[in-house]
Length: 164
Image (cartoon, rainbow, N blue to C red; front, side, top):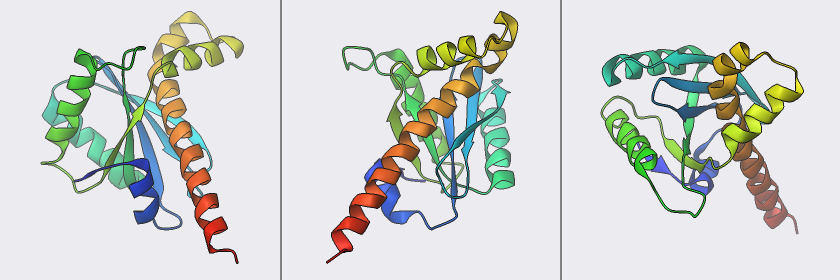
């Protein structure tokens, strides 16, 4: 497994390969998936966290079933740009996944993704109980959508460079 930048991921992905978004929480892992064209992110059911070995197996079963080519994982930076304990926990999770899979991981700054997800769920008039169940996957979807938008921009820039 390799940790890549979004620019490096853009060069290794093949057409038609989907990527997954992850929002790593202490109690759940929010999941989202891209379409094969990598234009849209769709929330998926969360994984209830147990212990790392069980979480890793569940995540990799999801990756196999969905034919995931890479993971984009939210990096919960502090608002001032510093790295706190949640960043360290996320990096440790990815380091541990290195022993389990060859799939690449991309860190994505997730500041305000949960706020945006909460706002979107409120606008859809989702009940408080349902918001609690959906928030992590909605946040994963925001994380992945940001990465998909960046990949699209990188793809357009690369094709512009090829035009005479």
